[in-house]
Length: 229
Ligand SMILES: C[S@@+](CC[C@H](N)C(=O)[O-])C[C@H]1O[C@@H](n2cnc3c(N)ncnc32)[C@H](O)[C@@H]1O
Image (tube, rainbow, N blue to C red; front, side, top):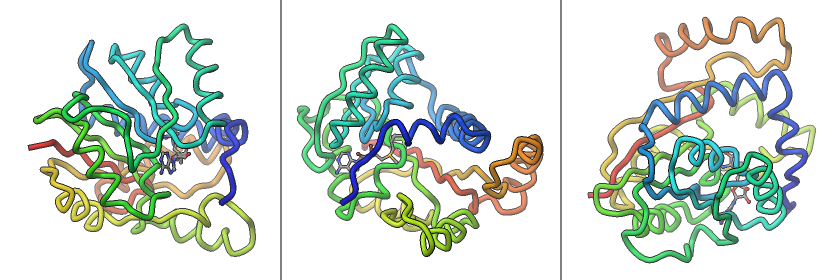
């Protein structure tokens, strides 16, 4: 499998499209569940630490895990630069090195789409969560025009989307229920077309409003809030 390139990964977030998408995705994730100061949080599949850093800034005692050492090295450097204490640990999501009932919150954005044994990864997240603990999961929505566009692009170019398992809202809900979670909420965002143009992206917010009313389950980014019974 092609390895992750942290520099290229974060470079996308510096593009107009990357910046706009990141802001909208983070709004969705952090409005789905408020982060309480001092709670113990895990960012599973943390990559370059984009969400770990947000969790730590909001006062959570944060651990980030990822199977890519390259991504972790980059994440540690970013956290250091921000003056944040985050424990970045090399770990496979299928075998998390933490005891049962350990975290108050598990957040995982983007990772599940790259894992074949989706159910097993969710069961691991359930195991390390305390009873009543929250899971916030973000995936790429199969039922979105972005998924179609990215699949077509992948026919002509080698992109990470050739390795992605897009997930639909009913599939995510079922996987969470099968793993043992109580599903509280499913929401999507990113309704505008992925065009990397500053002028066009000025209309992103009105398009978000329109899309969330007209086709609420068809945003490119799908987030779920679930709890451990
Ligand atoms: C799309 S990136 C998301 C990174 C980060 N969560 C974010 O939102 O920017 C997916 C990450 O999942 C990690 N990953 C994929 N399979 C994994 C596994 N089995 N165990 C741990 N991490 C995994 C990859 O190394 C990569 O850093």
